[in-house]
Length: 349
Image 1 (tube, one colour):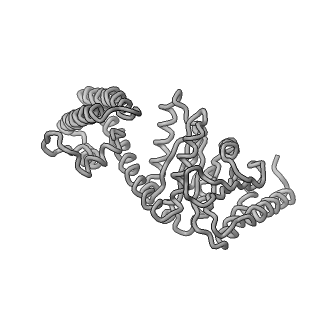
Image 2 (cartoon, rainbow, N blue to C red):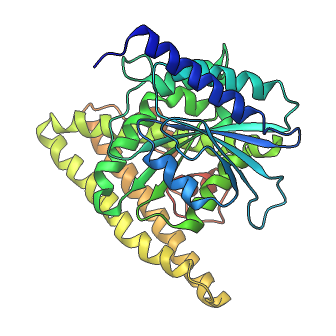
Image 3 (cartoon, one colour):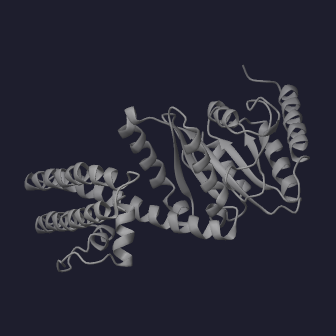
């Protein structure tokens, strides 16, 4: 049922009043984090239930809830979270009122978290139903990408049982927002069932973006993610182009097999390396084994790229650079800075 103008105006006034009430508790020394919900209040309520502290407004569906939280084992000042509910035509006036009032206080710093319930559809910028993301960008100002290093995009209810589907959704969102990633936007995941320590770690990284040093670190992480997003795009393009050629399907299968072998070989080695209490001798042995596997992984990928090129299929510039395609093989040496960066993106170290 469509509300009448009068009831809509009443809703608008109620949201403005809620914003005014919420903004009154802001103090000069506060670190402020705005938490945006993409479509429903479930993920917001999960965070509110986990975070200790004093709250104002208990229903995230019809008010701007706040919570003042002291992070454990942190020298940060208390963090004031503003939970902004799912998009509603009437609530926008309240958001504008809230942000304006908060900005008028001499705050130390602020950041934004965008919550996306994994499995729910996400609408990209400019789409008819993209309300929350577009409005967040409007709130960031005339040039929102200049502020993207203050924004963290978090997928909630990430399930290992549906890892492939969720990964594909995440990859799709990252492709749409790759220019925002380049500007400093980073991504996080909250697994299902919710693990409290993981929530603290994810939120800590998002809150760290409030400081100057934290924003520099976040931009560095975003730059690595930007490379990874381009790698995935170029690899998908390569797979698609190879699939249309007879011999290309064989090369595609070999690439996929190398990728699967990398995962099945590296994951057990990494699990052993990350075990607590391993001796220095065992650690050195594992690192040497990982180094050798890493060398052969790069070499195999380059061999497959050469086969693709021989078939007239272009290998993307990011892939060529990342895997040193076109350069001579070298014996594994102590990791260089570029090599360490590649390993980090591959989750090898």
